[in-house]
Length: 275
Image (cartoon, rainbow, N blue to C red):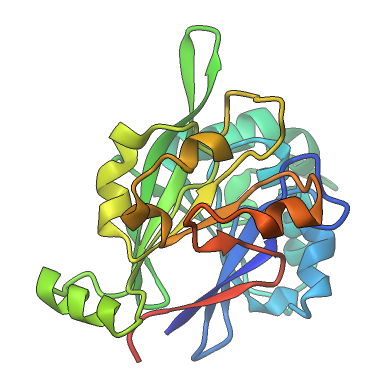
């Protein structure tokens, strides 16, 4: 049994109350956690929820924006210089893992007194190759490539997650489990543009969905916007929780009733698996 819990649920810039959208999986058996992204605000939201560095078994990185990796130097140094803490595992797309070091972390982490370091000095690296997955806490976790932003004429991808607590369960068994209120397969989009044709199969496969959702009047065009998401089929929306939003007014979010499961708030926890 795993619990998915949110450290924050806001956009990159709306962090005063919501925090940046970072989450973690909690293994109920041993209390170990897998961070899902580690943004710059994670240094604060992590401890606000009573977590300890000793609990961090690993971290998964979806993409290289600072609200998703800005806390990685803190995590690396905090564990490296503490002999009582095991080296955290690091999971990411294989090409993204190289870029994480070369483009983002190397400047701060390469130099320790009299030593030239690499990413493997701080993390036990587990690169994930295309269509590959990794095991954690009894779940099979598969990165899902999505389009986040265009870098000129080239796509900058983000990698969401399909978290499957029962990978060998048949379709009928899974349907029965879902009808009984169990979530055995969760789709976490991370940051993505609105792309219903590309993501439709993942929406259908999941028991519960955690979806990137922009709520500001000004559209950035690099996140799915609420006004687009609300046009999705009712069957999809009723299992979709919205995250990475801008807090315009509390009442604006509370009064919206377009068939979604709701807006995720910091500290919100979801049980995954079959009891």
